[in-house]
Image (tube, rainbow, N blue to C red; front, side):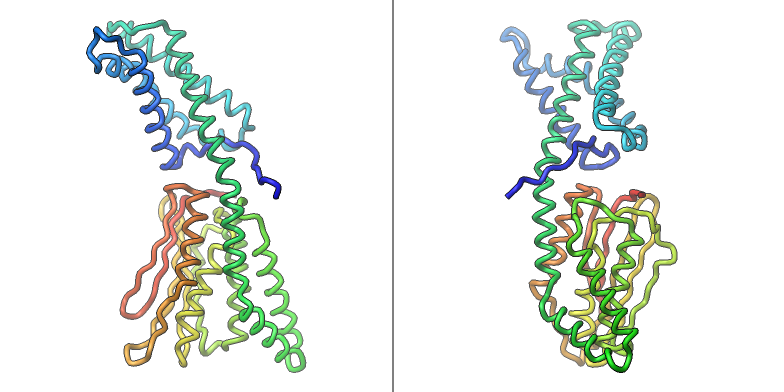
Length: 338
């Protein structure tokens, strides 16, 4: 099997997970350096304090500047962005060295050039780590896509959809053709590259195609769909096949078990810099037996959670909960525009 690789890109410096990794890895490297430089006649904590004074403030300042420069870095080629990050880290460290010695009157070990070079080497080590991590996540995303593909292509769904088409061919040929188009769009999306984020508008179109197929099969009286997407940021980037599995779970565990059917709703809106997606389905009354979600439901949610983590790290979240009347799945992810 050919190993899947991705083009190198700079990390997203507005991502909480990136911030945490930068700070933790930098502290770990600084601790190792302090231990290696620790002379036996000197207290163990003195090198650590000196390193903290020299590198912690410029590290925080550099990370903050990279946060502000993220829109520029996102449009910059990798090599140019790499040089920019290294130069910025060296410049901030050099300016801090001068400020401490001349402004505060404190003496730091080494020269300004030494502080700048160490900061640049530290930045290079961190960028190397993020590049290595990205290359490791590339096959993980491919594996997650395969898992999503295997989970979503359910033979009985295809069988039922084709039966619906056959039933419509003579009486409503145009609607049968529309169902076939929706089915083709759905399976085309199943074969898409999971490493590439897609606009929310594309995901909503795919979700509508899926609901159209299920409405033909179940009938509009049983599957009562509500779309609350008038305030949705259509250019927001989301992982492919994010909404369809959630809607499928709502249909499978909310609509199909109930003889009278159920209401399903999809809501999308922007809350600050965060995209929020709600998929709800009404629950059967207490007097009617309800079908509990099985392992397939957990598999779908687990797959989505894994892909969200691979794409957005700690900035994305998926959770589900239920009330007496409805089952709810909430997806929260940072806003990224096409």
